[in-house]
Length: 378
Image (cartoon, rainbow, N blue to C red; front, side, top):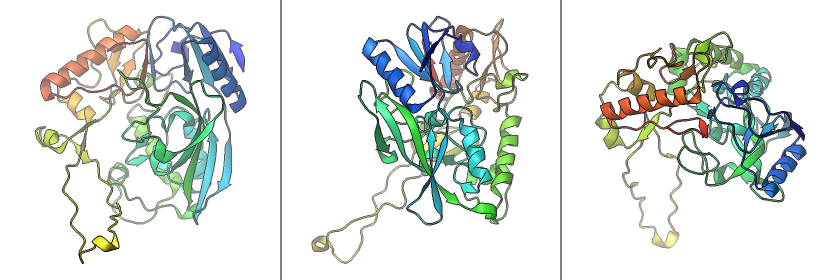
């Protein structure tokens, strides 16, 4: 590991806010990353790790602690116990989209719809990244991580990460601490080997985004190209020359609400059911079997509601800015808050609060921020 001259976080994050921290360390190997973390824990410093900087909203004052930049990389191909599949063990600092490109080029399917998502591989399970109905939890096998103040790393199965909609036990949600404070060192995915045959697209959101009308397999490379084009049209691919991309992606999460709450919203508000597990196995002991299987008990289904629709229909148009502010809503996507050039964290936070208040006043829902906030209050 190497202690370096601290760099302004505004230069290392896509939202382009934040001063230089008190200390900064680069870790280029897994061993260096573990050593850097253990040194910080031994000293009792405040700390956080920084990957691609695409999901971080840093405050204007200097962070009084140590920032550890995860700069590890590498992909290892491993056999899968499942026929027709392969496993990839990927270092936490590896660029996520570079991993997707690697998989698509080799005909490995399962993460192609997540093309163009910025950031690093280690951050992906933390918030269970996803796009167009595909999420990392569908292919994630396990992660190698080290818990705060632990002496060595452990391997944790995906089932123990509490993966949900843009969340896990590792995520630092605004207003609360993570259930498990740990740092991911590597990620293992299990992908289908499709080769040049491509794949049949099943997900409704992805089919709609690609305007697919048949069930014929489509090449992974074609699918990736279409996804990248779609993200670019929404300003979701970072471009130094385009202020619409100087943000943290979707600043607010789509709201997950009970069916009863969703029914109270205007019928034209886009929504998608958060489906229950339809493959749940019911086990009935033989001595209790009465000759029939009871019908499953009815249960309510949560619904995912479009935050972008809520924002626009609360009166916040694309390109909206508060007077004299250098922060604004993207001109391409209502969910993205952007730095239009020299905006402070205070200006972006002011805009976020204004949007939250407008949506709450109009629809009774309080939108939650998606990025990790460091020394910022909404």
